[in-house]
Image (tube, rainbow, N blue to C red; front, side):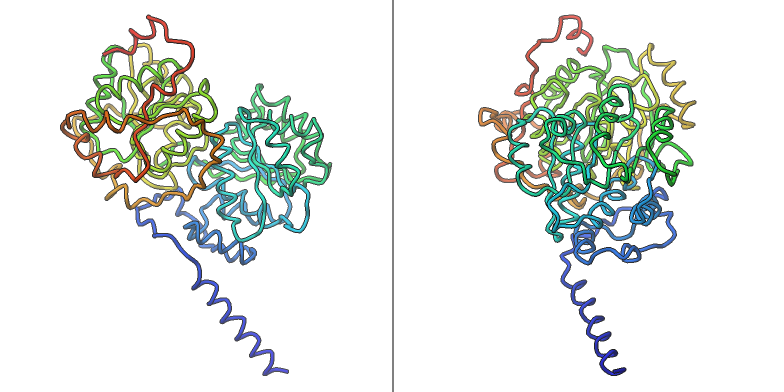
Length: 495
């Protein structure tokens, strides 16, 4: 008996080695990381006793060690406790709740077993992709549903088994109210960017949605900031929640912050100078209104730089295409409104520019958190006009951070990696063809090739981000909103 048991243990050990050797791990990301993600207790994902198929998905996604928020919250979530977790932007919160959700799903059941609520459509697409990537060996069906898409398609998809549903509150409530989505036996209710979901805009929807869930449910709340409204929700709906707070400081340690004091009419000229002097892998440029997003994107394109734009007034299919292509490195610069301040994770973004300075610290924190993802380095540059000077001081005080004047030369070691080609990009499944209208043409590539190459970054664009076959530069004018900007708005963004 002893010999048989020893042989069995030896065989099990060999099998363990075999499955690890068969994992198709991606190229290791060798960039330095800050203590925001490296200051852990030394745990491994295998210490959480996860399913082997889930571990395979985790390692094949490029995960090596759990980050602090993952290390703290995964065991508690697996134990069934309610969680109120606060951690910095870009430190791995998504995997912290996706991994326990996938572990607890029973693929043999036909019921919805986990609901993940997010505030924006782009974040819903990204989160569902993380679920599919990590759970690709689990035989679990993940469905994403958001506003701006056909309700009929969602109803058809729910005729099949759906184990994990990811979506925005309005659409989820619509499906639940019509009796199409059944949450009566769904044990997990997860809210990402919980502070936004519990704002006055969404709270009535969340309260109503909870009525479709069983009384014995597990609620997980994750965010970088928690205002007082979260506490009132916690006291009402959470059962002795386990609180995790990893926010000893608010801003990411890897992000260097500068401001440039300029007049409004000089902003475009200043941005053009930044483009010529900085070594940008990819950048996100924020404006405070949708009309200024479009006007600035048009101006950047006229200056000879590749540029996409995205805002809430665009068709959902166009937003999906911009988000998908920018993540895949088709274009270097993205101009957007605060639509993309929440949770969007694009590893190659190393520069964020606040073309319009935000009015509150929360928005500022989420904007600059689009760079320096998962402990890497990043640069945030703020264009400050005379009217912004008080907001600058207020945000510095509230966040306990220093935004320094921009120096004549910025040390590349603060934000530059060897090459954008070495930065691992997520494997994003192509969106269904019907989501993208055939009339959306992409003709900018020929125009871009005909323009004379200029100094600085413009000469290196093709070398840094080589265009793949079938991928062209997208012309921002394709995504213009139906209502033209006023003459006053046009004048305000001119050089």
